[in-house]
Length: 277
Ligand SMILES: [Fe+2]
Ligand SMILES: [Fe+2]
Image (cartoon, rainbow, N blue to C red; front, side, top):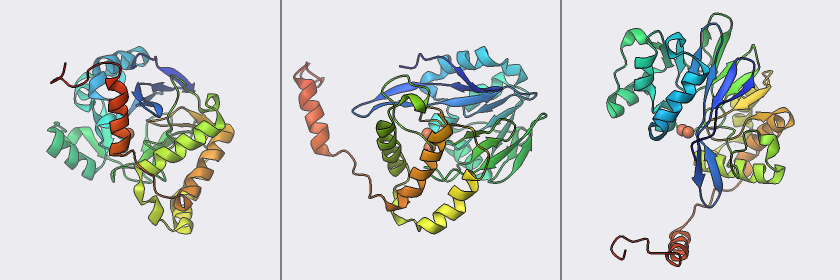
C-alpha cells in the first residue's frame, strides 16, 4: 500500500507518505516530511522496505544535492531507515540528531556518521536554516528516548514524530476527513500503545512540562509519522486527548486468543501453514 504520492501541507512543506495495512484496526502511515526553503530540510527518512519509492518521492520534491539538513526525530528504523543512502545522495546535508541517537545508530545499524556531518540538536535548540529558525521540541508522547519534534515558526508547522498519529481507513491524508469518533478512538489507542507509562503520569506535571509548552506555540499544522495531517480544531482536540491520557486505563493488547481466531478465519480461506500447503 505504499503507492500514495507526496502532498503539500503548507507553504514550502511536504509530506512523503507510506501507508501500510494494520489489521484489524485499519492502516497506519509511515510518513516523513520535507521543507523546501532556502536550505531544504528532510525530516525523517522513511523505511528501508519502501526505500526505492521513498527516494523517488523525495526527488520529486527537491534535488537531493540541494538538501542542506536531515532532521532525525529519533533512531527508530521507520524514521532513520534510509539515512545512509540519503547521506550519499545529499553530499551537502548535515544530520540534525543527538549524541545518544548517533551512538544507537552507529552501534546497531553500523551506519557511517562522520562527525563533520553531524550537529547535535537537543530539546529546545534552534537551527538557523537560512530563511527561518527551526526549533526542536519534545512531543508529549514518544516511544524512543532520543525523540524530538521540530517546529517551523514561519509556517506554524510542527513535526510531532510518533505523537499525534492515528490509524486511518485508507489513504486519508487529512484528519478532518476521518470521522471524529473514529479519529478519537484511534488516537487514544495509538498513544496508549506508544507510551504505556501514561498510566504512571502525574497529569499536572505532565501537562505543565510538555503539553502546555507545545500548545502555547502558534501551531497551524501538525504532521506526524503515523497519522493524517491535523489542523484547526482537531489540533485542540488532539491536545485535549493528550491531557486525558494519564486518566485513561492501560491499553489492552491483542491476545493469543485473538491471534488464534485470525488464524482460524484465515484457514477457512486456504492453508496458511507451509507444512500443510
Ligand atoms: Fe518511534
Ligand atoms: Fe514511528
